[in-house]
Image 1 (tube, rainbow, N blue to C red):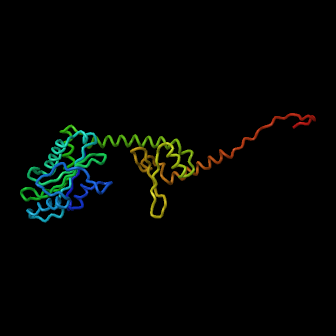
Image 2: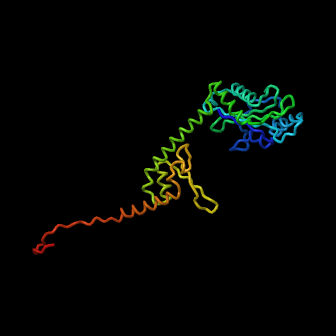
Length: 274
Protein backbone atom coordinates (compact mmCIF):
# COMPACT_ATOMS: atom_id res chain seq x y z
CA UNK A 1 0.00 0.00 0.00
CA UNK A 2 1.33 3.40 -1.02
CA UNK A 3 0.45 6.72 0.63
CA UNK A 4 0.99 10.43 0.04
CA UNK A 5 0.39 13.50 2.17
CA UNK A 6 1.18 17.17 1.67
CA UNK A 7 -0.17 20.58 2.61
CA UNK A 8 -1.38 22.57 -0.41
CA UNK A 9 -2.90 25.98 -1.09
CA UNK A 10 -6.20 24.41 -2.08
CA UNK A 11 -7.91 25.47 -5.29
CA UNK A 12 -11.17 24.72 -7.02
CA UNK A 13 -9.10 23.50 -10.01
CA UNK A 14 -7.29 21.01 -7.79
CA UNK A 15 -10.60 19.72 -6.45
CA UNK A 16 -12.08 19.68 -9.96
CA UNK A 17 -9.33 17.23 -10.98
CA UNK A 18 -10.99 14.64 -8.75
CA UNK A 19 -14.21 14.87 -10.74
CA UNK A 20 -13.02 15.25 -14.35
CA UNK A 21 -12.58 12.19 -16.54
CA UNK A 22 -9.19 12.03 -18.26
CA UNK A 23 -10.52 10.96 -21.65
CA UNK A 24 -13.98 12.51 -21.81
CA UNK A 25 -14.30 15.91 -20.12
CA UNK A 26 -18.10 15.57 -20.10
CA UNK A 27 -17.98 12.51 -17.84
CA UNK A 28 -17.64 12.44 -14.06
CA UNK A 29 -14.50 10.71 -12.82
CA UNK A 30 -14.59 8.21 -9.97
CA UNK A 31 -17.11 8.21 -7.17
CA UNK A 32 -17.52 9.71 -3.70
CA UNK A 33 -16.42 7.33 -0.98
CA UNK A 34 -17.15 9.46 2.09
CA UNK A 35 -17.48 12.99 3.42
CA UNK A 36 -17.91 14.62 6.81
CA UNK A 37 -19.41 17.97 7.78
CA UNK A 38 -19.67 19.12 4.16
CA UNK A 39 -22.79 19.91 2.13
CA UNK A 40 -21.35 21.30 -1.12
CA UNK A 41 -21.67 19.42 -4.42
CA UNK A 42 -19.42 21.23 -6.88
CA UNK A 43 -15.61 21.24 -6.58
CA UNK A 44 -15.68 24.97 -5.87
CA UNK A 45 -18.26 24.59 -3.11
CA UNK A 46 -16.39 21.74 -1.46
CA UNK A 47 -13.04 23.52 -1.49
CA UNK A 48 -14.61 26.74 -0.17
CA UNK A 49 -16.11 24.85 2.77
CA UNK A 50 -12.80 23.18 3.60
CA UNK A 51 -10.88 26.47 3.54
CA UNK A 52 -13.59 28.26 5.52
CA UNK A 53 -12.81 25.92 8.43
CA UNK A 54 -9.44 27.71 8.79
CA UNK A 55 -11.15 30.97 9.79
CA UNK A 56 -11.17 29.83 13.42
CA UNK A 57 -7.38 29.50 13.29
CA UNK A 58 -5.39 32.42 14.72
CA UNK A 59 -2.62 31.69 12.20
CA UNK A 60 -2.74 32.72 8.56
CA UNK A 61 -2.03 29.50 6.70
CA UNK A 62 -0.39 29.70 3.28
CA UNK A 63 -1.12 26.03 2.62
CA UNK A 64 -4.44 25.54 4.35
CA UNK A 65 -5.53 22.15 3.00
CA UNK A 66 -4.14 18.63 3.25
CA UNK A 67 -4.10 16.55 0.06
CA UNK A 68 -3.73 12.86 0.86
CA UNK A 69 -3.75 9.72 -1.28
CA UNK A 70 -4.05 6.11 -0.17
CA UNK A 71 -3.45 3.42 -2.79
CA UNK A 72 -3.76 -0.29 -1.92
CA UNK A 73 -1.82 -2.69 -4.17
CA UNK A 74 -3.65 -3.86 -7.32
CA UNK A 75 -5.45 -6.96 -6.10
CA UNK A 76 -5.95 -5.50 -2.60
CA UNK A 77 -7.79 -2.52 -4.07
CA UNK A 78 -10.14 -4.82 -5.98
CA UNK A 79 -10.83 -6.97 -2.94
CA UNK A 80 -11.64 -4.15 -0.49
CA UNK A 81 -15.28 -3.07 -0.42
CA UNK A 82 -16.27 0.56 0.18
CA UNK A 83 -16.93 0.06 3.89
CA UNK A 84 -13.47 -1.47 4.41
CA UNK A 85 -11.84 1.21 2.26
CA UNK A 86 -13.61 3.98 4.19
CA UNK A 87 -12.48 2.58 7.53
CA UNK A 88 -8.94 2.21 6.23
CA UNK A 89 -8.84 5.84 5.04
CA UNK A 90 -10.24 7.14 8.33
CA UNK A 91 -7.54 5.28 10.25
CA UNK A 92 -4.96 6.61 7.81
CA UNK A 93 -6.06 10.23 8.42
CA UNK A 94 -6.29 9.78 12.17
CA UNK A 95 -2.88 8.17 12.66
CA UNK A 96 -1.01 10.35 10.14
CA UNK A 97 -2.37 13.72 11.28
CA UNK A 98 -3.40 12.99 14.87
CA UNK A 99 -7.02 14.02 14.37
CA UNK A 100 -10.44 12.62 15.20
CA UNK A 101 -12.12 12.03 11.80
CA UNK A 102 -15.56 12.35 13.38
CA UNK A 103 -14.90 16.00 14.29
CA UNK A 104 -13.00 16.95 11.14
CA UNK A 105 -14.42 17.97 7.75
CA UNK A 106 -13.05 15.87 4.90
CA UNK A 107 -13.86 14.67 1.41
CA UNK A 108 -12.87 11.28 -0.08
CA UNK A 109 -13.11 10.26 -3.72
CA UNK A 110 -12.14 6.97 -5.37
CA UNK A 111 -10.36 6.74 -8.72
CA UNK A 112 -10.28 3.32 -10.34
CA UNK A 113 -9.42 4.29 -13.93
CA UNK A 114 -5.69 3.75 -13.38
CA UNK A 115 -3.60 0.65 -12.77
CA UNK A 116 -3.95 1.17 -9.03
CA UNK A 117 -7.31 1.93 -7.43
CA UNK A 118 -6.73 4.82 -5.02
CA UNK A 119 -8.51 7.30 -2.77
CA UNK A 120 -7.97 11.07 -2.75
CA UNK A 121 -8.65 12.81 0.56
CA UNK A 122 -8.92 16.54 1.21
CA UNK A 123 -9.26 18.14 4.64
CA UNK A 124 -8.45 21.52 6.24
CA UNK A 125 -5.30 22.09 8.32
CA UNK A 126 -7.27 23.37 11.30
CA UNK A 127 -8.65 20.91 13.86
CA UNK A 128 -11.86 21.09 15.92
CA UNK A 129 -10.06 23.19 18.57
CA UNK A 130 -8.99 25.80 16.02
CA UNK A 131 -5.35 24.66 16.15
CA UNK A 132 -3.07 24.09 13.17
CA UNK A 133 -2.52 20.46 12.21
CA UNK A 134 1.20 20.08 11.65
CA UNK A 135 2.45 19.13 8.20
CA UNK A 136 5.98 18.49 9.45
CA UNK A 137 7.29 15.30 7.85
CA UNK A 138 3.70 14.38 6.98
CA UNK A 139 4.80 12.42 3.91
CA UNK A 140 7.06 10.18 6.00
CA UNK A 141 4.36 9.80 8.64
CA UNK A 142 1.88 8.82 5.93
CA UNK A 143 4.24 6.18 4.55
CA UNK A 144 4.88 4.71 8.01
CA UNK A 145 1.18 4.65 8.90
CA UNK A 146 0.28 3.04 5.55
CA UNK A 147 2.91 0.36 6.11
CA UNK A 148 1.59 -0.39 9.60
CA UNK A 149 -2.04 -0.48 8.42
CA UNK A 150 -1.13 -2.78 5.52
CA UNK A 151 0.46 -5.18 7.98
CA UNK A 152 -2.52 -4.89 10.35
CA UNK A 153 -5.09 -5.50 7.59
CA UNK A 154 -3.07 -8.22 5.88
CA UNK A 155 -2.49 -6.10 2.76
CA UNK A 156 0.56 -5.86 0.52
CA UNK A 157 3.15 -3.53 2.01
CA UNK A 158 5.03 -0.88 0.01
CA UNK A 159 8.37 -2.59 0.59
CA UNK A 160 6.96 -5.80 -0.90
CA UNK A 161 5.75 -3.90 -3.96
CA UNK A 162 9.16 -2.26 -4.29
CA UNK A 163 10.95 -5.60 -3.98
CA UNK A 164 8.70 -7.13 -6.63
CA UNK A 165 9.24 -4.16 -8.95
CA UNK A 166 13.01 -4.42 -8.57
CA UNK A 167 12.91 -8.13 -9.40
CA UNK A 168 10.71 -7.55 -12.45
CA UNK A 169 12.99 -4.74 -13.61
CA UNK A 170 16.08 -6.93 -13.27
CA UNK A 171 14.44 -9.75 -15.22
CA UNK A 172 13.27 -7.34 -17.92
CA UNK A 173 16.73 -5.78 -18.20
CA UNK A 174 18.33 -9.20 -18.62
CA UNK A 175 15.82 -10.23 -21.28
CA UNK A 176 16.32 -7.01 -23.29
CA UNK A 177 20.09 -7.47 -23.11
CA UNK A 178 19.77 -11.09 -24.24
CA UNK A 179 17.58 -10.21 -27.25
CA UNK A 180 19.81 -7.33 -28.35
CA UNK A 181 22.90 -9.53 -28.24
CA UNK A 182 21.27 -11.59 -31.00
CA UNK A 183 21.02 -8.67 -33.42
CA UNK A 184 23.81 -6.21 -32.59
CA UNK A 185 26.49 -8.03 -34.58
CA UNK A 186 24.43 -7.63 -37.77
CA UNK A 187 23.71 -3.88 -37.49
CA UNK A 188 25.65 -1.23 -39.44
CA UNK A 189 23.54 1.81 -38.54
CA UNK A 190 21.15 3.06 -35.90
CA UNK A 191 18.24 2.57 -38.30
CA UNK A 192 19.19 -1.08 -38.76
CA UNK A 193 19.53 -1.38 -34.99
CA UNK A 194 15.97 -0.05 -34.51
CA UNK A 195 14.56 -2.40 -37.14
CA UNK A 196 16.41 -5.47 -35.89
CA UNK A 197 15.51 -4.70 -32.26
CA UNK A 198 11.84 -4.48 -33.20
CA UNK A 199 12.07 -7.92 -34.79
CA UNK A 200 13.00 -9.44 -31.40
CA UNK A 201 10.37 -7.53 -29.44
CA UNK A 202 12.43 -4.57 -28.23
CA UNK A 203 11.22 -1.07 -29.08
CA UNK A 204 13.81 1.71 -29.43
CA UNK A 205 12.41 5.04 -28.21
CA UNK A 206 14.49 7.96 -29.46
CA UNK A 207 15.07 11.19 -27.54
CA UNK A 208 15.42 14.14 -29.93
CA UNK A 209 16.72 17.52 -28.78
CA UNK A 210 15.53 20.98 -29.91
CA UNK A 211 18.02 20.93 -32.80
CA UNK A 212 16.39 17.77 -34.12
CA UNK A 213 19.38 15.61 -33.19
CA UNK A 214 19.35 12.24 -31.50
CA UNK A 215 20.65 12.73 -27.97
CA UNK A 216 19.73 9.39 -26.42
CA UNK A 217 17.23 6.58 -26.44
CA UNK A 218 15.31 4.16 -24.26
CA UNK A 219 14.55 0.47 -24.67
CA UNK A 220 11.06 -0.87 -24.06
CA UNK A 221 9.94 -4.48 -23.83
CA UNK A 222 6.52 -5.16 -22.37
CA UNK A 223 6.14 -3.11 -19.19
CA UNK A 224 9.89 -2.57 -18.84
CA UNK A 225 11.11 0.81 -20.09
CA UNK A 226 14.77 1.66 -19.42
CA UNK A 227 17.50 4.01 -20.56
CA UNK A 228 19.93 2.24 -22.86
CA UNK A 229 22.76 2.76 -20.36
CA UNK A 230 20.65 1.06 -17.66
CA UNK A 231 20.48 -2.06 -19.79
CA UNK A 232 24.16 -2.10 -20.79
CA UNK A 233 26.81 0.64 -20.70
CA UNK A 234 28.01 -0.59 -24.10
CA UNK A 235 24.72 0.56 -25.63
CA UNK A 236 25.47 4.29 -25.42
CA UNK A 237 25.32 6.16 -28.74
CA UNK A 238 29.10 6.64 -28.89
CA UNK A 239 29.84 2.96 -28.36
CA UNK A 240 27.14 1.92 -30.80
CA UNK A 241 28.71 4.11 -33.51
CA UNK A 242 32.04 2.33 -33.01
CA UNK A 243 30.31 -1.05 -33.16
CA UNK A 244 28.44 -0.12 -36.35
CA UNK A 245 31.72 0.93 -38.01
CA UNK A 246 33.39 -2.34 -37.02
CA UNK A 247 30.40 -4.32 -38.28
CA UNK A 248 30.41 -2.42 -41.59
CA UNK A 249 34.09 -3.21 -42.19
CA UNK A 250 33.71 -6.85 -41.20
CA UNK A 251 30.57 -7.42 -43.30
CA UNK A 252 32.15 -5.66 -46.32
CA UNK A 253 35.22 -7.89 -46.07
CA UNK A 254 33.05 -10.99 -45.88
CA UNK A 255 31.08 -9.95 -48.95
CA UNK A 256 34.18 -9.06 -50.93
CA UNK A 257 35.91 -12.38 -50.46
CA UNK A 258 36.15 -14.23 -53.76
CA UNK A 259 36.98 -17.89 -53.73
CA UNK A 260 39.40 -18.44 -56.65
CA UNK A 261 39.14 -22.01 -57.98
CA UNK A 262 42.46 -23.87 -58.20
CA UNK A 263 43.31 -25.86 -61.33
CA UNK A 264 45.46 -29.02 -61.36
CA UNK A 265 47.94 -29.43 -64.27
CA UNK A 266 46.70 -31.51 -67.20
CA UNK A 267 47.06 -31.83 -70.98
CA UNK A 268 44.87 -30.59 -73.81
CA UNK A 269 44.07 -32.68 -76.84
CA UNK A 270 47.18 -31.46 -78.59
CA UNK A 271 49.41 -32.75 -75.85
CA UNK A 272 50.14 -29.30 -74.49
CA UNK A 273 50.21 -28.87 -70.74
CA UNK A 274 47.88 -26.46 -69.21
